[in-house]
Length: 333
Image (tube, rainbow, N blue to C red; front, top):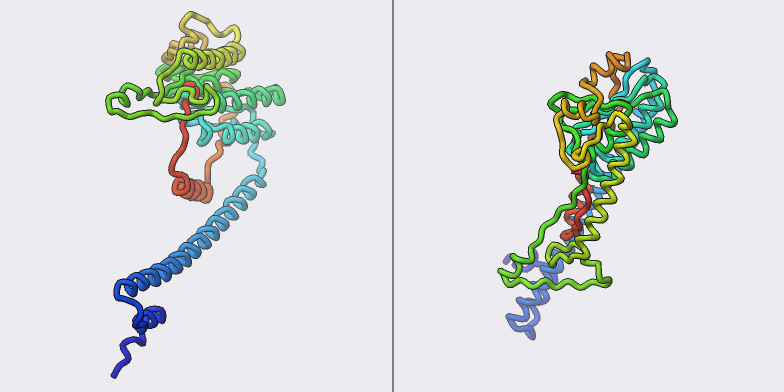
């Protein structure tokens, strides 16, 4: 006769052979044994997964590092040329409009002995005043360090708010007659849900240490004190924006009551108002203004390992952090 218990788990065999254990106790203990086995198996699988993930990330990091050092070390003689840097999209902490992305490109373009001028092509609706301010400060520093190397801005579709904040630091701004230019203003937006909460019978239970810690909380009524404080901050940032524009444009700027009102205009109107200097593209500026038709792109582009590493990090962060605290921030838009 074949032994029916030969393939059973040892723990299960001992449980079945013990006459002092009732059926329900036996079933419960069997479930606990099986759960313990499954937990150990799951732990081993997760351990293997994280080890493989770490190995993949390490290999990608090495790939990105050696790719960067190889490119950085190739200081080939490019001859006399026009250096190009592009900003596309919002001015924010990541992407082509981030200070950490733009500034290394600016430094490389200015320091290259073959670059006759630097052209910053901007297509941006605006964004963070902090990122824009950091980029402007670096542009001003580089212009002092390289007084014979001009910086020109060429506007593509739109150069508004934070984008124009950066553009105003250039020596000259060139636009298309249909480009959108301007929007010298600051905004801070959020939502208020107190009325909806009252209708639904939802009670907001917010505890703070510090009477103003709930500043601009969208689920609490807005106080006059908080509104006044927010408006004061916006006015201060607006004045910083205005100062940068006035310093950059100088006597070319034909100020009117609407200039710093937050409105934007076509490229043709912007030239009339002194917000821009003329019409042109990257090619025409390189050919007719810089007199160096060869254009070299210094824009920092992410390679494949960097993109994979960022996506992997974002996925891990999303799975580890399920909730985030959002506070409204000033935007140059």
